[in-house]
Image (cartoon, rainbow, N blue to C red; front, top):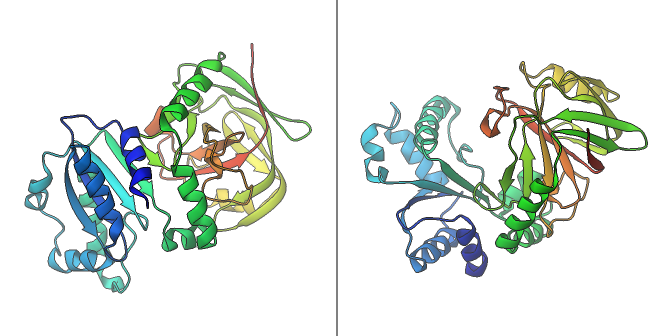
Length: 328
């Protein structure tokens, strides 16, 4: 990726003069992405450490640390104040060639790594325009690469300003969401705070989001295209919500999928509004859809990470278009 774009992203992270970055590259093989990030950080006078979590290095790490990573392993990085994950593949994805018998050890090592990194208030994750990420998203690489780069190459100061203005424009704690010809969903936000994703969390970015009260969402919501990851894409789906929980839909596949999830997975946990002007809504389940300006998404499941009280491992977002109105 161009250093020009990476420089814009680093500026949007608001790294302080006293910060020390732990720069992690998650990849199949070492590549130039890490070098470009290191060069940009150096040019900006940012102190950093680098770790390459390539398939080869992860295999060796597992082979050499059967009991997990000791505290001594992390001693070199104790002055870290923030973490940047550069993900040519998802962080924590098992390396190619790993024997399944080594999965428990690998899992313990990941737990050690993520436990260390979760200590820091700012953990930034960058999804890179790589072939493996395109494959996992189910998209053609050339299209995926073009769309990811376009979404990253934005004016982050302007994006933050527009996100802040959007939040300030929502005057009411009680919203009515209109979708389709006649569906309405009421939502209560009393006491909850909006979050802005414009450069200090995940990249690509561009949304504002909030955790509604877990027992105060009621009504119906319509999706012209309903994308259920790992299951399929469905047309003209209506989901019914009562007292904050999904009670059913006209999609049997979705009903069955949700019934198989853990307790709390059916709770309406998030309202997010897309704000990135460089993302076009495809309604096909493209990885960027929820950031597309003019869309909003409803999240089900976990929301304790951003101001809610529903603590479960499941979280899934569903993107649609419609009208969001304040209620008296």
